[in-house]
Length: 449
Image (cartoon, rainbow, N blue to C red; front, side, top):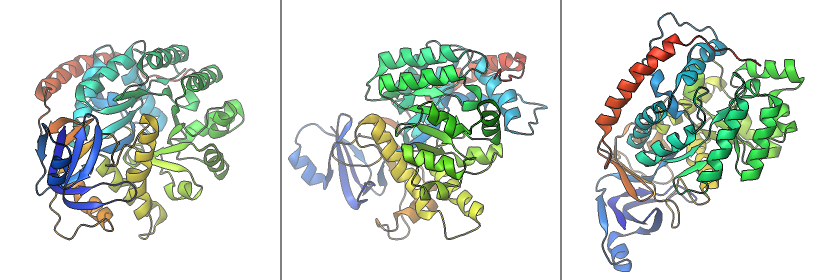
């Protein structure tokens, strides 16, 4: 058993409780009980490892609803002369080239540093969307192995795409992985599609059939840029969400990344289906593709969760970005407070809990044993009522002392028990140097559809 004791425990969930001087008892990968340390020890005698959280803040691990763990090798990549004027040029000259150049071994070494970043930031659960058109067969095994090595709770998928005529191969890899990997306490799987504008009717239909057969959701980018809608109207005579709906791709397990350029009818369709929108504010600003009207989506009753899209692994930073972006979008300093907090603390937790089948993102008996200790000593009173203000303007900048996933200490004051982080980074640098040479020799990639 593991006892996290001496700090102020914030349970999140409903109701959110703030418990000064409390302790969280973990047994294996589950929360057993929360209460006074002496009481817990009396009720659960035996060998207990203690994590000292005195003077610190104890919270559940945070959830990232949309990530791209493979994106590490883009960091500092040689892009001299690369000046894309729009989103399609960003895809063609950077991301589609990158995912075509990835080779076996690259995926592990690109994912591990980002997973360590997640642990440093208090992010213990990641819903990932992988892309590697040049390396598909077996890639999800390599990615899953990296997630288990780092000890981060992860849901993985491969974005099948026909931009290079390899959609069937992508579906086959998702099928192979799902047949072998489900269920798993740490790593789960979904069915991935890149985006409607790079997916043929045949690949879309195969993805829907596979998701239904394996009882999992679809994870797909939609309407990140207007080009997705324009392609759908030109080739299929309907907008992207209608096309997905007609193919049977929309239900309560479907994850729609971005959803920026949606009209009212599409919002109604998503609400009726119970599908999710995954908002990625920093990425959207970086790509200058626009900003999803999160407030309008929520008014339509759509579930909106929060992701990073590979920009970082720090969900606290995404929270602040979402909060500020919605205020700027609406020109109103009165909005987006509860909505932004709700995305991270409520919607992300509900989404992860649905995928893993038990409570994630809150500290409750029977829930997953994912706990984070922050070096945050509040300078003003901290209560359940004002916790959001502390998170947005204080905890957001606090360092993470300890990160526990599934009852196992995975990060402690910059170190990763059982994992040589400097060695991981050294090997990643070596692999990235070789990768950059292949990347530079790869011509810009344009879609065949």
